[in-house]
Image (cartoon, rainbow, N blue to C red):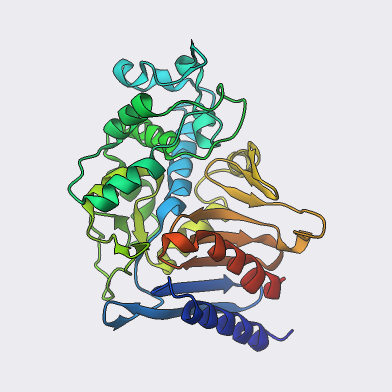
Length: 354
């Protein structure tokens, strides 16, 4: 298929999807491939009364987990931690106390950093349950430490460390605290120091926690949980933390992803570890260190669709497709669109490129 036909097909599918989906108020999509000579940037819908724009910053939800895991990888390469270090080496005793008690046995000191990274710690999730409270009450007080404390009191671990897979923001809250302990910086300052400034991500920031070095001329895209707009909910921002509080336009995210893929941030050996020290997320998807890896499933997932990257609960995604050397970055800005967004990316973007 000719390049212009591919671009037309992708754009038509995107605009049709957004216009027909009553839940989605606005969405953005960027497809970049030097190999195919493609740079598509499109937007559909509105932010308030203003038309959506491809360059407007968007809240990326758990896409931020890849920034967190990559920062941990940098500290690993700098010999400031090891992926196999017990997390008790870096966290306060009071936080560690009773963190992981499974069937009467305390496994807290057996949790390693790699268990947090690839979601195999067995710790329960705090994001889903606390989200309901945050949506109902924007003044709901929460911090990463309090969220972890809530988890210890109200939820139970699913299995011993390393014995299963459970996706949970609790793991990434703990990673954020480890980053703060080692660097001596707040998490948002660490993002600025290690990523935003050196990569030229001038329009990126942490929701309600920091400011971009240069303010975008476009407003941040509205994002929603059902019918509730969450842009101004400061309690929500505190809850998300190192699990995914980054706000950025697609161009900034492309800078990060290209640098990661080309091993300009971490070495090829470290990136391979991040991708392949993984657990099975679900059929066709393995989860590494903050990385979703789509793998071949006969009939259902042909090899040509294999890609890796990261996705978020608001229908956000940032993936690399090796076969076409393409970067696909998008956001549907709606909690109820997360699964549909990944399906769209695979079938309506990557499939035409492959």
